[in-house]
Image (cartoon, rainbow, N blue to C red; front, side):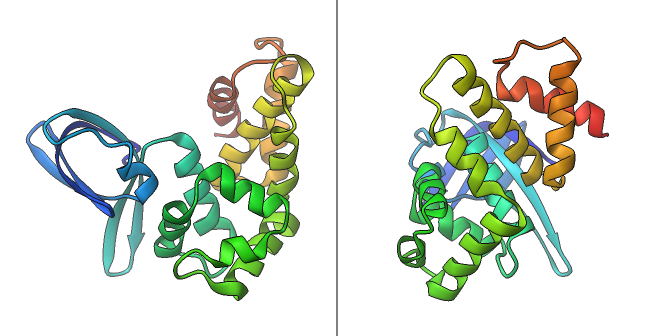
Length: 205
């Protein structure tokens, strides 16, 4: 699996970028949210990637942040009827924080305004992320964090759990792995989410 690319930006459009990585040119499909963060051609750039394989096609998707990639994976792996094309449309239609807020508040109208989504798909997104995966509850708890103390610790744990869910793990096993790491005594209660994710992956694998 290709998890990131680091090289020189050769060219970019709102839906794709071409990177020169040690003499090899990679065409990466990107959302507008990532395109907006790209430097000028000729400058160094790093993109987090998701390698998607279908029967007759292999595609490489690129993202500027972990939050973007996590949301993309969450959508295509956990919501029925959502493929990479719609996943990219969501990221191009609103920011990650806007999407999280819409799901938490059950704002079907806002999500349905995204190009290619529609009301029925928007309803399914909200329903399945709330009921089948339990993501909305975690997002709501994270939104309430005001920095520092217990609130920030809870937000970090929720972020780590959501990242593991986006990688294909079930919510229950992701939560158990994070709690096991915290109980090991190796981490402070407010340990950063990325440290918890790495430790949990070692436990799960």
